[in-house]
Image (cartoon, rainbow, N blue to C red; front, side):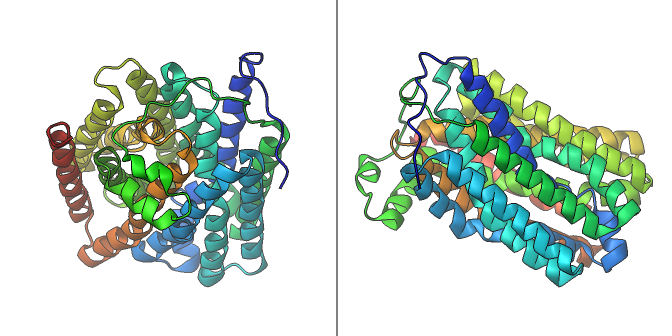
Length: 414
C-alpha cells in the first residue's frame, strides 16, 4: 500500500480545514444508513414484524465486527496512510449494503450490517487520527468535536431521507441510497486527504505506563497495559456507559414518542432528526468548551453524564409522557447523550502515547464496542418484557451514576 509524501503543516495551515471537512463528510456518509435505522424503526417493525429486541440486534450487527476490527484498524493506521485505510473501509460499507439489496428480509439485513461493521472499523479511528494529526492541542477539541459531529449529522440526513425513501420505494431502495452515500464519502476522503509531514504539536502524554510504548511486538499485552492505566480505564467506563445511552436514544426515541406520547410517525421521525442535530451541535459545542480548560475534557464529559441522567429521569415521570416535555427531553439527551463524544475522544487522543495514537484509539473503541453491541438488544429485550420504557431509562441512570462516581474518585486515585 503506497504512502503519500504528505504536506508540510507550516506551509499549508489552511489545508487542515479541508482535512476536517472531508473527514467529517466521510464519517457522516459511512454511518448514514446505520444511523437511519432508528428513524426507520416503525417501517422495519411494520414490514418485517420486528420487536424491540430484534430492532436492537440490527443496531448491534453493524457494531459486532468492530469488537475485533477496531484493534486491527488501529494497528493498520499506525503502519499505513489513513487515506487508504479509511477509503477502503468506506468501499466495504457500500459493498455490504449492496448485499442487502439482493434479498430484503431480517436475516439478509443482519448479514449486510455485519459487513458494514467491518468497513466502519476503519472509519471511526482513522478519521480521528487524521484530524488529530493536523490540529494542535489548543484547537484539537473543537476540531475533534466537528469531526465527531459527522455521526449525528449522518443521522439527521438519514432521518430526513430514509423513511421517505422506504415509504415511496421500499426498504431495498433505502439500502441503495445508503451504499451510494458510503461510496461518495470514501471517494472524497481518498481524493482530498493527505497526511501531514509532521504533527503540529506534541501530544501531552497522561498517565499511560511507559512499558505500553515499548511493546510493539505484543499487541494484546500492550493493549492490556494501556487499558489498565487510570486515565484510560476511566475513559473506557464512561464511554461504555454513554454509548449505551446513545444506543437507547437511537433505538427507542421514535417508538417512545409514538406510543408513550401519541406523536404520529412522521412528526416523530422529524423529532429524531432534531435529536441527531442537537447531538451534532453538542459534539462541536462541548468539545470547543473543553478547549477553554474549565476543568478540561474530564469535567465536560462528567457534566454531560449528569445532564443525561436528568433527561432520562424526566422521561421516567408522568410529565415525560406529555408531547412537548418528551420532545424537549429527547432534544436535551441529543445534546448531552450524543454530544459527550466530542470531548471524550479528544481526551482519549491526548492520553495516548504519541507514536501509538491509532493503537490507543482502536483498543479503547474496541472495548467500548462491547456496550455498543450488547446494549441495544438487551435494552430492547427489557422493553419487550416489561412493555414499558421506564425500566430502560432506570437501568441507564444507574449505570451512569456508577460511572460518574468512578470519575469523581479518579483524581484522588491518580
